[in-house]
Image 1 (tube, one colour):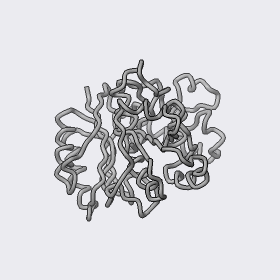
Image 2 (spheres, rainbow, N blue to C red):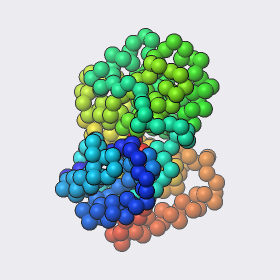
Image 3 (tube, rainbow, N blue to C red):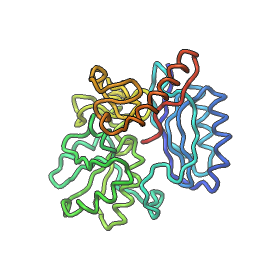
Image 4 (cartoon, helix red, strand yellow):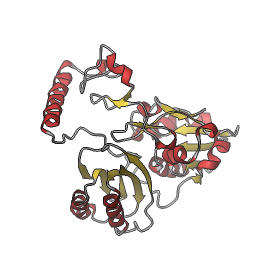
Length: 305
């Protein structure tokens, strides 16, 4: 059984590039795969491997500047969720594109999973899902508003268009693991809002702690690894990934006439050109060659909490 650790931490790294190679080497020495993003604002990612290896990596991260109080969410997997280890340098560990946002200064009020249901069912509360549209499509909280954003950086523009809808309302926000809400609630506070709340630990902690019979969650939660989706208790869900568009689909969707392994599904078939599909077919051919040789090919999900 493999240990999966999802983590993020906002801190100040003066030279994130200097942290990259030691972290990458440590992961490989300990048989740990996944994706970690480093930026001046901190670290974000998901890793998986033997428990001792994951613990060694987490211990190293806690020694980095400002990371002594690092928190993470654990799950288990019977098969490797990642094909390889990637440590990447980014401008932001989650991209909102608002340079004045600083979650270290302040965020919305945290809400524990046990208190979340009462908050979102209050008549003066608006619940907003900050995730991307393809994530919301397979599961969300009852009554939540879907901004239908393709990327997180689209959220500020959506808010500007829709803000008048929420006059005199308290705002409750949620995302997969909490990181997007750290930024989005900081940004809303900067827009002059006062009553902004967010789910502590995100959907993953809620699904881990709240039993199905008490749950306000409907559907499954998309995750950025080979599990694709999880449900209550963080058990793997039924979804698979279309490697043409990176969206989650159900196993039965593979029988759709527009599905082609590694190339397209019914959701993206009309979104790509014949030239795109030809490139994807070549990529899929390389994946299959690597599989037959017993080597890994980098066609996995990325980080995102």
